[in-house]
Image 1: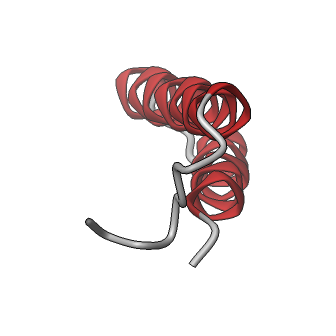
Image 2 (image 1 turned 180 degrees about the horizontal axis):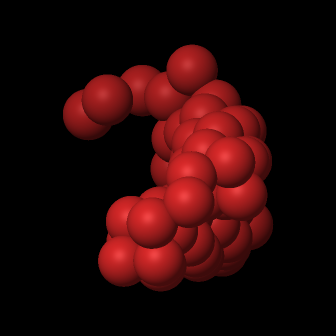
Length: 60
């Protein structure tokens, strides 16, 4: 499983949901979780670039 893709898809889902909700506090929360997923996806991708033995889908 490609965790970078999963985290970036989660980002899109959370931000999309944040656009659709009307309550301000919920919108801010969804945008924040989406941003955290996006940053985590970038970090996971960087780990894979720096360590060629690292497999993001291995689970080990």
